[in-house]
Image 1 (cartoon, helix red, strand yellow):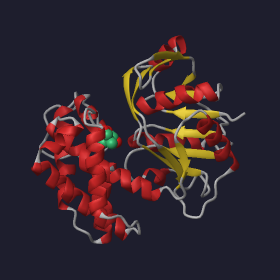
Image 2 (spheres, protein in one colour):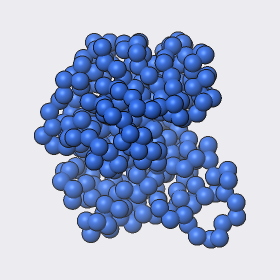
Image 3 (cartoon, helix red, strand yellow):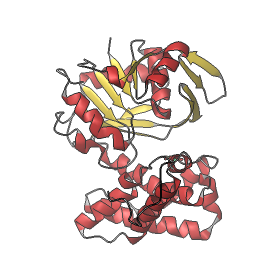
Image 4 (cartoon, protein in one colour):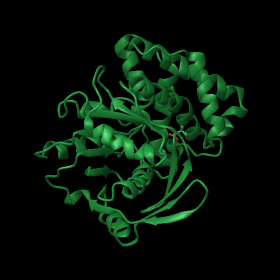
Length: 323
Ligand code: PAF
């Protein structure tokens, strides 16, 4: 039997912990607060499926303050990018590291904090087109079916025996999940979609589908994608701007009623993932000598919005936060 942990009790963490607990009953969910732990321990996870049917699924749950020296075969890391250094620090204290560690964050650069911990092939990334919405501490709604890919960041790494034992039962249960080696191209494709949709929906406070109603929005998305494609190419990931833009439009259509994750962060007064999405395109563009003015402007506007929307944003001294 595989011992699996899901680190992070956000929307995807709850969805996957519930899904995995049905197949691997020893799955442990690691959450950030004692309140969330107590809620889930008492009531389980309440999952509302795509058809609107509710189910309560009991899950082993622990607060990360209780995590000591653990021995998991497989670890799904589903925290926001900004919490990754803390996870890497906790893992460094484990005497036995997982044989499969999967990073599920939006954006680029998530592997950097972990590269020195894991040999190539153990550290994987995940890309999913599934949607989920967290409705409460242990309540999650599956808002969109889709496909998930996991695979190593490193080229040439082979699939481990643990990865095969993790994937096969999921597929048997009808979960659409594939191994893709390396995962980098899928990550870039997803980043482009997020670069084009997320900041604009957050700035304009609109649902994804509304972006298709305006030529101005479409032309901004086109510029964002063209810049990002140039940067990806400089990194050896050959994508075509036209094909990527078509995909962005298709995602806007398919998720027309969704509030993007960045819009949700802004609405909750939380820090967004802009630095790891458009911000990474700008950073990598600078490294490769490629100008990315539209992405840069979106990063600045979102940072301004974060300062304005943060609940503890007192009067500022006029300087932008430096990141
Ligand atoms: O971040 C998000 O919200 C999603 O990745 C996407 C695809 C933009 C749909 O809302």
